[in-house]
Length: 86
Ligand SMILES: [Zn+2]
Image (cartoon, rainbow, N blue to C red; front, side):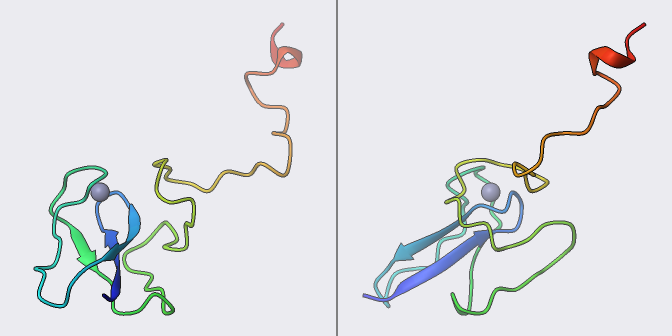
């Protein structure tokens, strides 16, 4: 059975699905329930549709995030920092 890659255009959830050729394509996103779950043409060629976020999130869609986490650097001192509170 071929594996199809699906992606939700609503929340960005992405998953590979093992389907028979005769199976109807999935349309409902298992993550957010929106009917914007679409089959991708190829797993090798990511399509960057729309704007703002990457389709190359390999973290199996467990988390919804609008922006990639920058975990490699500590956050710079911001307005919430104690050194700003007088
Ligand atoms: Zn979704």
